Image (cartoon, rainbow, N blue to C red; front, side):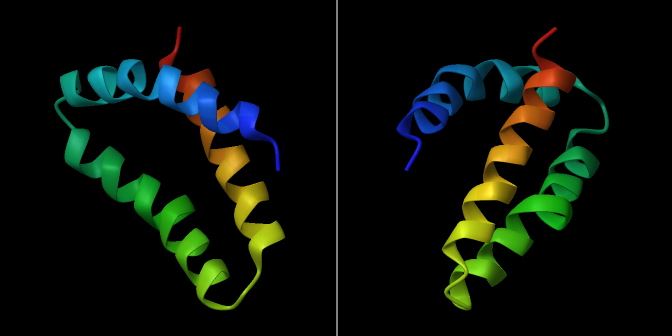
Length: 70
């Protein structure tokens, strides 16, 4: 797999989380991340759809980078 995206996530995740945590609506934002990405990834994993999991995870990282890494 593309290990680079995982390493990138560990590098950028603290920045993204700090920015989300500063937002007064941080609970809503985290709920949306769960609903739009993580809950779907979990279902994919439970159903053995690892390629779909990786694609959605990759999309989540890219979307969050664009939105919160300005």
